[in-house]
Image (tube, rainbow over all chains, first blue to last red):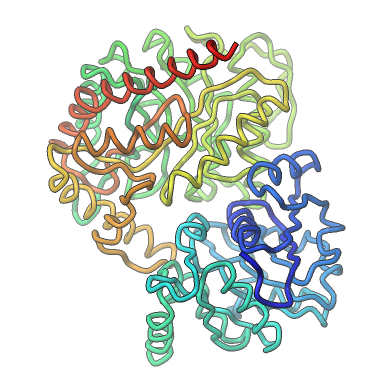
Length: 219
Length: 351
């Protein structure tokens, strides 16, 4: 397959379950992929060689070099440990969740604001943050990916304040094998979070739009 | 190929079975599993109202006294929030009771209740497990242990007793799919149990490869891989579906409500049981075909079915254990050993 947009190279912080699944789909779609873990270099290299063949294992300080898009796929409790200054000027994709039953209470996310707004505030001001992918199970990413136009294709919601970044990420999502549904800015990104109508629901585009509309009327 | 079953001892859903009834039933199920020749039975630690197994070693001790051949394991022990010294003492005791049939399967835990209950910080989620796993491995091999770490008092030449029948006491690492956990198990030279909770089994094959390559890279000898999965056997596929899918959906919806995920129907769960999936729910022949497909993809040495997810009646679990032991396991073992000896012959011929 070939990539369809101007994004050619992506970097992924976190070679855990979701980071690996995104890397594999991106590689299959023809992207160049750079990936890093918090562990020692030889372990990152082994993980990349076997789980994401074709991806380049790098250390965190060099993850963003030459990338058009950087994915944050670490546990949310660890996100502030990332070298965030390196994300200046970049498109950044937040696939993380604030999910207390799974990760415990994180006081900085207990404000009631969407978690991605809090992440955005911790990034360099010119980083362009987009939230997506977080609401599908990591082990379903590869299973549910379909070519464009497939009748059973699942949709992924995309939220971001920079419409240009949202458009580019939407193209990336389409290449991964999912319909992208833009749902507004990060202020609206609560519709992607745990407890929402679309979280873990694996809906097609029309059903997703309907679910979001119904939820909006209720609230 | 070893074939077994495991459970979290499901209780109290939709006014279901009380622990006082369920636990004696469980012991009868393990006794039957032993009689029909299953290789291993596991009990998984949870500290949650839906399950009656916060203390697996106690349940396994009762089973040890009533069984003679089956191996008895936790599935898993939430080692992060326990004391490795105490875990060792308990499972070494089960090993003595069972005359060498006890195993510990150590995991980080997917539910967080034990962290709250025992006062551990989630920020230390992985560090706790890493430190305690290393200590448990040290204890399992015997001899005076000198050790110090962050999360418990140091040990200064302590001999931790009782010494088990098996030296070392088998310690498996339960892995949920995190590559770092896979590599940790391999680096320590410990056998790995891969929790294949759903999706396609092919998605888990790279993790088994990663484990085998990491064993080699870290200079460890080959170790067995176990696959743990959702499965159920009944006389017909219809019966299996009628018993299994509503119970799994009910548990999913109770846990899901706590986790903020949408409700599912039994049909949604049934959809997870498709070709190539990790789920193995059906008639004996369907489950045979599924387990053999899993083996083709993963090349693992042990397979363990979580027979009850949610409230499944005792008589249906008993029948499932009987069918698994008498109809499924013999066919799967024979076919896998044929495959393995074919492979050996091919290698021999090539030389």
